[in-house]
Length: 365
Ligand SMILES: [Zn+2]
Image (tube, rainbow, N blue to C red; front, side, top):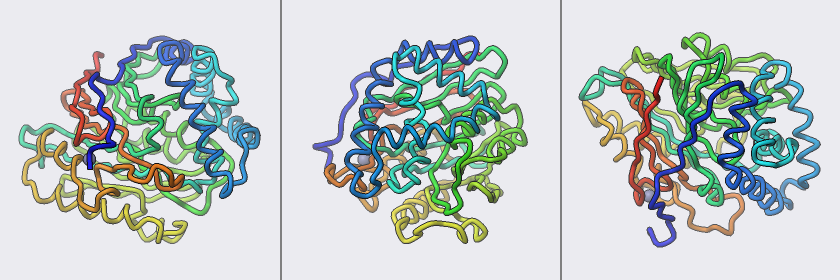
């Protein structure tokens, strides 16, 4: 089962950036030029392989992406600046970088590619009283080499530590105000042209309170939505299910919360597209929920054990790509991370966590 699973002997690159959003973007682009360029090449391959289904060329995707950027520009000019900086630093076209950052929107989510598992436990359910989160990031295998960690000290926003890959704006991580976010793709039928959800979720990393974080998630004229697992260092645990026009908030009243890629609330289930395609997401959800509930007091190690779980292999929590030739079912876990929000640390395994060790990064603020 592990023959084709890539092994990464080194920790994922850690990039320190500082300054204005344009400057931070340039620093990311310069340090990760290879990864950014590679992710754009991968985007080309992805669209070409799905052409029969989507009938979308790269040029067509650029035209689509250009419709979304003005909404981001109006609401979040600082993150469009960050994208422009990444493009300049990596020496790529801004239009190409826009396609990558709006990929889910321009393909109308038809690729169903992002399949993540997120969990969190608070002080009531941990051995040392810390607040812990865990996230498996599932995406196409080609981008696994493009994973890196950003340690950012923005000029006017809180410092943060986040995982990203290729030319994507960072959105999975935590900040110095004790706000942590993990995103899971969901599939509503009310998506529209607006601010791409990756830009909206990037803004959450700048939030100083849970209220501010949720207001970003519900930003006016958003194109679509993620499920955002939102955790505050106080132990408040939320799962905010978002679409372009609706939202619902789940609360971790028993000290834990779990989410995958289907909506859990009836209000959001009303607008879920093709729910029968999300059976594997339900299996991962119930499995992770049971494993979370089974342990009275969690530690970083017990969460990492859940991240390595292989029930329902290959569409397991530790997700493996078995048939790499099927363009619509190729996703795998490209990294798994545990955030100790109390200690302001991220423990990240690059690639499948069943085959790769965890490395620890700290936010210095
Ligand atoms: Zn595995």
